[in-house]
Image (cartoon, rainbow, N blue to C red; front, side, top):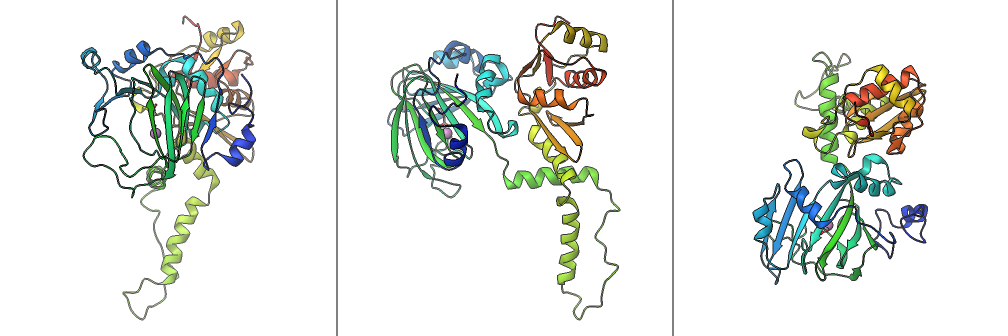
Length: 385
Ligand code: SIN
Ligand code: CO
């Protein structure tokens, strides 16, 4: 595999010219692509309680659309028509280690901008219809052929059909159209209108989706965070109050005082980074977080490291770190942990790569690994403990 998934285009050039700016089609981005998940395995995942999936069935004329949310039943598969349906399974990288390795190709963007790997399977004509997404996406053709039509920038105000359970832009018009074959990849920035449908059967598309919090989510999360760190005595105060001509006036100095309060919080990189690290590494599925939790003793951890047992980030776990003025915080799955200088090397390794077998045996590293094992963010591969 070359260093760039963009063929002749370097990652640097991709970021400068395409990322969040314009679509890019890369022919043969993944030569000899071997899909790590078969259609049967995908259907199997859709039957699972914990897996997020959708089945979309359309009438061949595109007028009617049906949507079924997973977990799906065996019967829902046996009742399907011969064509014009698609199954979409979210976060396959959380469940299948080989699928999570594919996502590693896209770490040129920060970990906390990645959302998940979605895989779709479609029969002839199947797709989700013309729509836009608010996120960047890389669409990798894994098997069969998909025709991607795209063009135009859409948003909340764009007309959409209100008689169907999926987003369909009725006034959408394609500007470009390409047939993608296995190994080809299409990058689409947020809000570009698109419609992808299978040309022939057995069409599988892998979508590496990114995430970006809305301003509304940022304010909501930040104010929840402040809720926990402020107390009832932290209040608006005005010891410099001057008599007003009209008591109804909200004076410029009152607004200035409010502004000062807000600045106190938003001007603190320490506070902002602590909140942001937790916010952006929050697990995609909080109810499932910690399922792989394991409690090992210091001696067990020491012996596993000495044996060279690979330590792995749990698939789907989110890791990031923030460093400033000699302070280093590792964030894993929504939890922040201040690291000692001896722990930062391991913390950085965990953020950069999926597997590690060259860990230094130190007390500090054992403490860090123990905490991460306990919260289910890492695990030892092949450890029968
Ligand atoms: C797909 O059908 O694989 C992708 C759906 C989309 O366009 O978001
Ligand atoms: Co889309």
